[in-house]
Image (cartoon, rainbow, N blue to C red; front, top):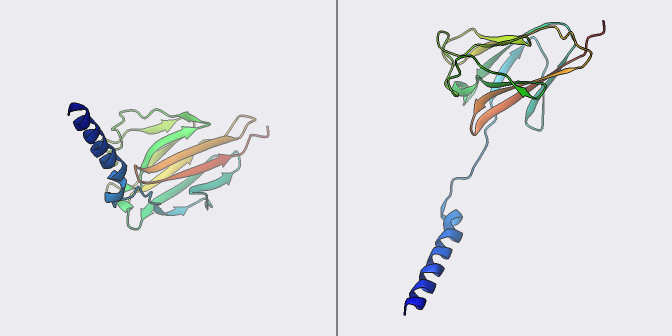
Length: 158
């Protein structure tokens, strides 16, 4: 009798685990963000906004818009594949001028020009003084609501 009960219990658990996805109607969907960009041309390719600039210092702004405007802010910065530290990181919290971590380094800096959505971010990338191109990746948003902005900065010719 114990063997029969264990077998029946095993079949019930197997049925429940196999059908869990059938009854769960919510699918994991990633949502792209809308933004206005001034000062640089970006093209969307395979879900990533890509722009190319020469080796000189560059400045541009991004302002969130659309349905998910409240999450269009920078949540991570990578330069040449290395995650940049944020002083006073708040773990994905929305930006507030007094408390948001400084996004700054020898690569440049990001400043917030607004305190409420839609956030306007000013990006200032420093001159590339190396003989190799630099690749910046800025993640805007988090979770299922995000986009990547990739800027390729040309190598210095001096």
